[in-house]
Every structure is written in C-alpha cells, then in structure tokens.
Image (cartoon, rainbow, N blue to C red; front, side):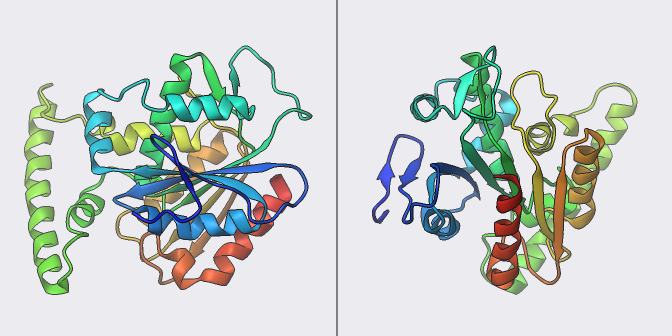
Length: 285
C-alpha cells in the first residue's frame, strides 16, 4: 500500500501539515467500513493543506463483530493514546479543561463505521480514566440506524453488477424482514433472538451525538452532512440523531445534499461540501 509521505503507526496513519497557519491544529478522521487509506486520504488532504496534522483511522468489517460481541481490545489504541497524550489532545478525566491549553482538535466521522471506531477509542481512553479533547465534530453520512433498508444495502454494496446487486438486495431485505418478524414474535413473549437496540450501529451512535455517555464523550458543535439519496444512512434516521443532539443543547449545523449517495457528498458537491466545512471550522476552531 502506497502511503506517500504519511507515517504509519500500528493502528493509524499520520500526515504532517502542508501549510503552517497559526497555532498547531489536529484532525482525526475515522473512515467508513471497508474504506481504504486511499479513499480516506482524499479528505485528509483538505486538512493538511489548511495547517492540520491529520490522523487517519480506518474501519473494518471485523469492527462490527467485535463491537457486537463485546470483544474489543482495550489496548488496541495504546499507541494513538500515547500520541494524543503527548499532544495534550487526551488528558485525565479529573483534569479540568481550560481554553488556554485545549488544542484545536477536530473529528471527522464517516458512516456508521466511523462512529463504531470512535466508540472503541473512547472505551480505550475510559479504561485509562482519560478523555479526548475536541472542539468540533463533523459527521458525514452518519450515524444512521440498524434498519432493514440500511442493512440490505450495506451487505450488497460490494456487488458491482447493478442488476445482480438489486436482486441480491431484495433477497436480503426479504430474508431480514422474515427474520425480524419471527424475532418480534418471540420478543412478545420475552424471548427475542436479537435485541436490535444492542446492534453495533445503535450502541455506537450515542458516542457521536451525545455528551452524556458514562464511559467516554467527545465535545463541541456538530456538523451533519447527509443526503436525500443515501440508502445506508437515510434522511429520517440522521434527522432523528440530529434532534437527539439538539435536545442535549449541543450546537448543531446541518446540510442535506440533493442527489449524492452514501459518503459521496464531497465528490458530487465538492465546492459546497468543503465550503461548509471551512465555515464551520472558522466559527468553532
């Protein structure tokens, strides 16, 4: 894998700023499940060109499994946490934050996979009784919900042939629907096969949109970037998350793009997308 001038650590990649603008700034990018370094690095270029040191954290299909069965390693992010501590981006929970010493740290999450990976990092920090210090959070195509529609699109997204993909998607949807109907029947008598509230997508979402989690939080205004054509994280799902965020009193900015698919908003609406990000960061960082 060609990583250019990035430094590769155990579970992340570091890119130095390509411009030096004012005080040091940092951005952590949490990729979508299956997103390659090359895919996520295209977003990192914006931050590097604007004076940020970037940390790229990729997400994998295995993250869904480990989150679902509770087998995530609490030492997985040790190297990243040491790096964050050195930069004062992570600190003991007992230490009060002051404006003078809080670095400008920005999180940029992509899809549900980004939320799941963030939750893992926060749990690793919590195990050390530490917290992540952030000033703003950008949520691209997330977080959605553990839904039949999103699930059927997720498991068939890798099928290249459009006809085969639609056929497979419909088959998966039908199978999921039957499973959920049977599950609901058993749940009615107190014996559900699967509690969907414990799905990795559902348990990870609060760490992206809430600041009241007992085992780790990120703070700062949120910018939600989503689309009317996203089939994996649909409009109504993300808007539910937005309302939950607002209910806590968190500052929220949002943009619903028209016509762009999942995690493709910066491709279809490039200038508008980065214009919104720039304005958001100028206000809050």
